[in-house]
Image 1 (cartoon, rainbow, N blue to C red):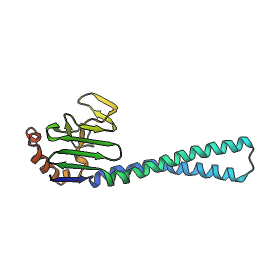
Image 2: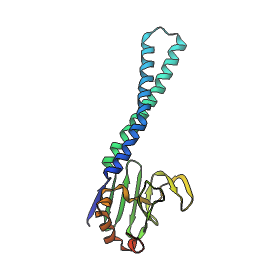
Image 3: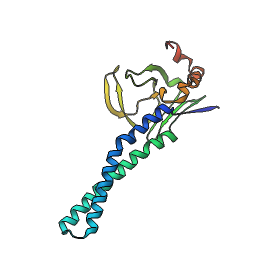
Image 4: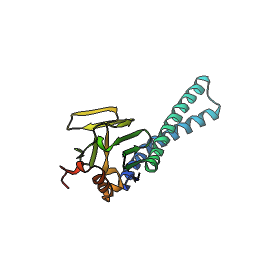
Length: 183
């Protein structure tokens, strides 16, 4: 059984790293609050109420700093551990850390163009072993909600789709996908 893994394209990775730019002000704010609270606690000139206030502010700053650090490290994990695996038995999509879809070739339904202009082609499965949650935006079906993972795989995320290798693999395993698809 041959399995081929496709990694995220450079464009998808660059999009993930935009998160760092968005989170950077929160990271710096958390660092500033922790620094202020630390200096305030070490000065020793505060009353009991001042000490408690500085301690609570320091904890909140630490929470903001740690959440910002996690969000800054998330794109690195996604770039390293996300993939789309195609094998004779089916398809396996892993969008690190919480999102995974697995299905057989009989479960594959259609390839369609996303209604959002910044997205590309998506692969919909009739049914699949799906885990994780995500925000679903599907204008055709009238949905906008956070729900259990729907069996939809964004093909445009992967370098194999851009280079057409993934297209060839999908044609070999599921030729029914390309009956009505205009290229």
